[in-house]
Image (cartoon, rainbow, N blue to C red; front, side, top):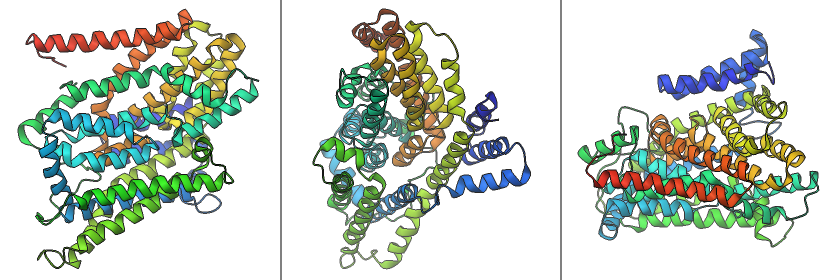
Length: 523
């Protein structure tokens, strides 16, 4: 069943079930079970062993899988930080402080978008940290959690994929180094190529433009419009009848003793400690080479996140503990409740993430990516459509596997091999199209870890986040695909970029004019 059309069955089954049933764990479980059966050719005993191994490998892979374990612990610790900040009244105090300074809904949305760009070192870190900072502000201005999740998800990966000083940038620069060595490319270094590719990533350009336009206006489409209308009219920011990881509203009594510092200090310590450790671990693992790009290529992100989360959680507890003498409601019983509530609030995200990892492992065993890649390699493809074809193929792979990095690893070398044999001048545009497609597929996939993290950071149901973000992602992808088609047919990056920008201007202009004329957008 490996490397055949049957390898598409598990991811498609999981995704279709998610969209139909809205039950993520059930759908992922169905995908995992079908994948195990296919890998072991329907052997009952073999399939059970494969099922066990697909979950075990997330925690034990010839030794402790510290990468995954640290990520899971970080998520739990962030839940604890959130609980203590809420318990101490820090969230309320920060919201009250922010309302006096950020007086409009537009301002709260623009702040969130800018935070997503500023915190660019890692997508996990971005998703959860931006959520913690922005949520009290957007909540106070009745911005739906779905809109918050959209802003988080559509700034985290898009910024990381074009930033050389990030975990993504380090990984991709190292990948480019291998590709350039293989094909004897000497015109530019991997770092120079990575920076040059940024304006060729048409999906990132379109997505960020959509984010800021949606932040500046009420550009609400389909499901997002429903969430925003409910938030505006009723003040209900998310569907309370669904599982919303990371949300703790109503779990603790109102606390008027909280201060802004009760929220800011834990978040600042999280950022400072995490960034400091990322730099230190990268410096140590690089053999003491004081080069920022080498450091980020070797940094230990999960360990840095875990220790940063641990320091932030301890500090958030100490800030609450200082209220014991002045707040009659503050006591150790609430401390234990905060610990329990914080962990419980993140358990849905933890379970979804573990299931997604298991499915990703089995999809790799089925060689789903390799099968998709053969679609291009075994057909004579006209050079003019190779950029757009690689964009679409990578998007589908990332969507089906839930892994942008896995798609990078498979299709960057394949895209390079194809274009170097036909037209080496299009090497960087084709590689940029692969990066763009992976981010797009990742944005649309309900089994993607970054999708899950963004929903968790915003405190909203995963499927609600997927369904509300989907229209924006698809529109951005269509615009990017047109840009890559023009680029391929003309051989000019500039003409492709001008096409993308032109379509965006027309789209935003049409929407603005239709609203001004009183003909409200009906989407």
